[in-house]
Image (cartoon, helix red, strand yellow):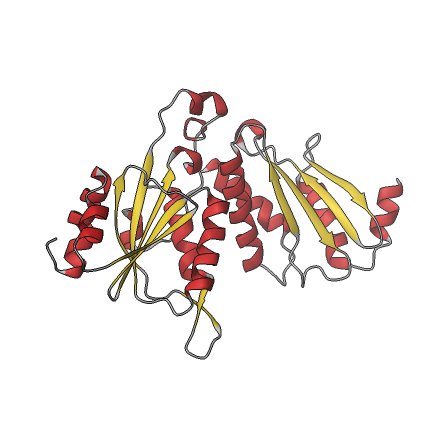
Length: 289
């Protein structure tokens, strides 16, 4: 009763209307709750029963003064998904909310969440039990970067993304060429692939690759000629091989030269590097080392 009074007394008709709509649509037991409300914000708990096995709970915090101009704060919880999977889903729904900024969004986000999760049958959603019994499938994606203006900014940004997505990488500089190799486990992020990728990206079967590539193309990673933050518009995906790189840190930097020793020693140090060099690097630089 007190919650109803507080909702009706809010000076934000958009939030009031959205809560009423959510209450009417998500009317099953424990499916929708106004968790808390004060003069500054409202917290909603949404547990859509349309999602198979009731896997997901969505927590939403709305700023009473600024919503829907400001995006809602979102958090996804599930006891049946791994930490990495939850992070990916959390990232994707926040990206969806960003697209809808300025509109009342919560019902649209719930509908997106239901559609997205139900796109995958239960057998494709790895539980902790199923993952424990499966071998890890690790892949490495090879990318050619046209140029880097600020290496400090570029490396810092990539390192942050790699930590968030549980990836490892090696950034290789040789003459005028720059190659980036990115490794990750397929099973960790198997569920939440990113739609609407280019033809070459569709050849990359690991969803973490698609999510990483989407970030690399749509978020600021470098600076332009006048020092303004800019996106990577000239990234080229060369391909992918099965196997994981041995990286000391989240992102290793390797500078190779023409002495022969550095170049040959590096590419021949592991079978996966031999394969990468023969399939993807050598055709780019036009050399036989």
